[in-house]
Image (cartoon, rainbow, N blue to C red; front, side, top):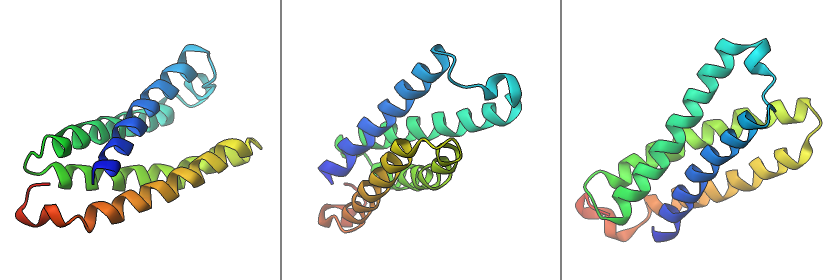
Length: 125
C-alpha cells in the first residue's frame, strides 16, 4: 500500500507540473483553437491530480476513507491514461504514448496492491 500511495503523490504532482510547463511554454495550441474542450480537459486532469495527492495523504496518515479516495483517484487516472495517448499518437509523439503505457501498468499494479492490502480490512489503511 505504501508504494501505491507514493506512486499516487508523484504522479499527481507530475501531472500538475507537466500541465504548468505545457501552458507556460505555449505548447497547448488548443487554448486558441478549442478553448472550451481544453478547459474541461484541464479541469479533469487537475481534479485527478488533486485526488491522487489527497488520497495519498489520507492513506499514508491512515485516515478513514483514504483507500477509497485513492481508488477513485486511480480510476480517474486510468481514464486519463486510456484517453490521452490518442492525442499524442495523432501527433506522432510516440514517446508520450509509451510513457502512458508504462504509467498504465504501474497504475494497475498499484490498484491491485491497494485492493489486496491486508491492513485495509478494518476500514482504515
